[in-house]
Image 1 (cartoon, rainbow, N blue to C red):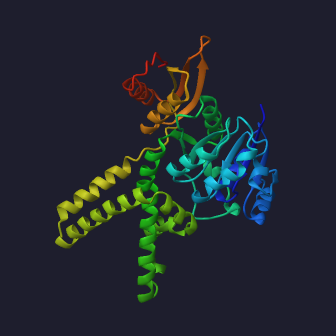
Image 2 (cartoon, helix red, strand yellow):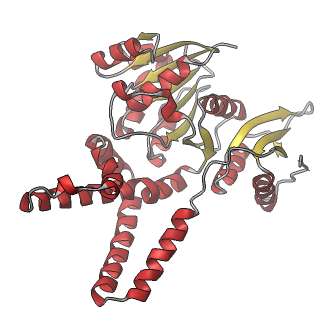
Image 3 (cartoon, rainbow, N blue to C red):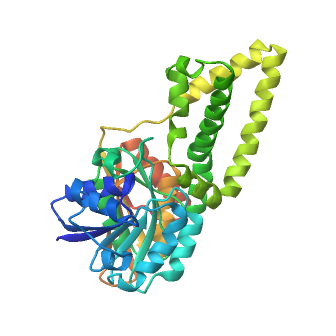
Length: 365
């Protein structure tokens, strides 16, 4: 079955999505809209879209899947502008790195029969714009989805399968939990890099040649400081509470570290260094081999269950390789089929869902 797609926003991420879509044999057409006419024209020239449109509404007409790749603060308004022309049955998603407000606001403007599933591909570079777009950017990246109780299994399955075809690893999380986690692993590192880069630049004015001495470690930890500042203004506005909280905790820990350094407490410092090294070495990587295990979960045939099951798996940090739902002939019931990579991961999924009261009847080991 062929598919038509629309892109609202054709920068680095939107352009990369367009290029990935164009590589799929089942995608019949990709239509691009960007606020900047030159950028959307360049998206067509680069092969990220078949054609461009002059408005969001025109771009989404007839599209089965719509990707909104705009700054997070602009996402609800863009979707509202396109809403009257959404095709019934369309699946709409975004790429913003904050989710709570977006998910709530978008729900107010969607027409009946259109499904919004918040999304966040954890991919990017310090480079910006359609010129830097690359479908390989999406391969192997975590792509977070934030389904709500209103998301139908068919719509989720469509989007999940499409993102997996890009080579992404799909995980579902509750929108609020997503924002709390991003404050720690994404937003705090960027603000830390910004602070460090500004400090070094100011010291560089006092000590000529300081920045020319910057070694690999400094360049690695400050790389993200080269990102688009307007994007980060939106992120700080959208996720300010969580970011402020984690910044205060981080600042407190830095002050504790300062006291240890000043006191010359070698044993305490060594403990901090060792625990950080151990945690860094234990960062999970992608499991590239192993048995695919099918977990069968009988469920009531209602949307809220899908959100609960997928976010429960996401909380474990486990990717669902594939997802299908089989409806019972009697109606009102169905079976959710989850494909999990690895026996150990599948067992964790079974145990977590059983703890929530689901009767996981079969685990193909």
